[in-house]
Length: 345
Ligand code: BGC
Figure 1 (spheres, rainbow, N blue to C red):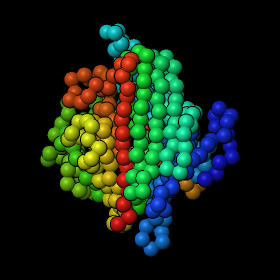
Figure 2: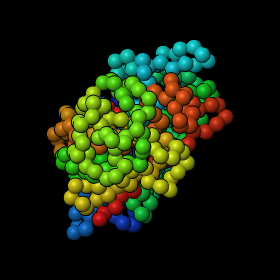
Figure 3: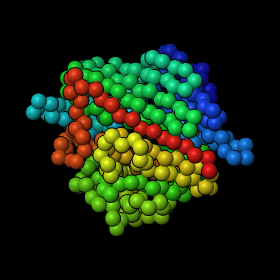
């Protein structure tokens, strides 16, 4: 990884690599608290990169795909960049037309995080987001801890506190390609334990109530390739593929059962996702075209898949949805944990 050009704040990008007893390694960066790389040793001596990333650290602030970044304050979209605070509409900073995507134009992905702790198995970053940041109310302090275990689990734990009530929804925006860089990710098999998904309009804004996956191409309750029912539904056609939040079967606190499994097309790698978050956004990389890759070129659409743990999009404006409250109150702590576990088969 080329790492000579400074970050937008003039300081160097600082990288940290975690290692485990199985020879797996994971690299993180303080800029955007970004997950840069996941290298998994496979049978036969091959080591495979499972994560999309750029050739040089200086390319990260230039791409708009949020590759591996920590996303906040509110991951996914807030319609018309507007929330209600004390029964009054409050305007947030918009960055996708009239809407806010992934925390606004200067979201947490575009910030220098402080590194609080680091050793061979974990690194912990912290960020202060001042009152009014991207339009949000209250001073928010957040942490993210990445821990690599000896059973090839990357555990990502988020924490946060505020001094005024504010919606908080932190996620990591890693894109996976378990076949290695450049392959069409639609040949991966996916199993996603969700009975309902949230329909969206062509701008990704929720457009209907939670809908049963039963009988549609949105159904991943049994493993199938992303290709099998690709673009079959009107819901997919609006957003060029899968770009939808699924409400997980159990709504919180369950890190012991998988939310999803993903298999490489060559049968050599499996990934399982565990999360305490209520929903997973399945995004099939529909707009990856032109994003800088690891080898001096660019990615094509559908060469990476993201499985983002989060509250449903636009939840601050939908208190009626069956999930925990996305508003963090003063005196309470935000806690969310997501685990990506990798298996060499
Ligand atoms: C969104 C996509 C968006 C991508 C990159 C995903 O989480 O759902 O619509 O293109 O992030 O911004």
